[in-house]
Image (cartoon, rainbow, N blue to C red):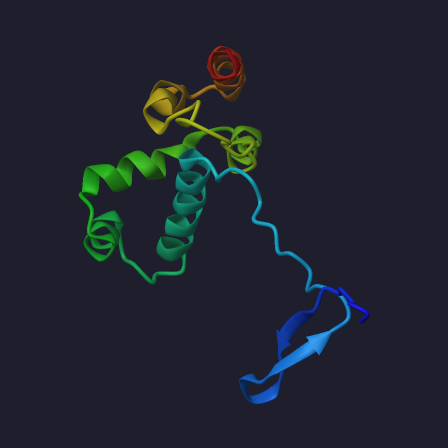
Amino acid sequence: MITVTQKVFFTRGSHGRRRIVDKPPPVQTVPEGRVPRLSKLMALALQFEELIRTRYCLDMTELARLAMVTQPRITQVMNLLHLAPDIQEEILFLPKVLAGRDPIHEKQLRRICQEPSFARQRRMWQVLKRSRMEDSVA
């Protein structure tokens, strides 16, 4: 008697019927890590600005009511727009967090947002980024 061993792969065909295929279906990989919360907040601030600019929302108070958060929290998020454009871009494209907590938080940026000089903001940002990224690696 002869025994033949072969792997068989199934896929779903029309109407949910199973079909036999020659090779396994490609494995969908989930990208590792997660987007930092600060990047999400920066994107949210840009979206809020667009809503106000297009008059979808009249002011930040209405925006706060629609988002179901307090008006001071909306102000904190919107203050991220006071950052230099290159810093905003860097925040949007921060590397994904692989494990643990985010290295940089919105609260740490509040002093930088209050600085009117973009040059000083950039220096403060570099210091913060260097210190926080080193802490996350160690």
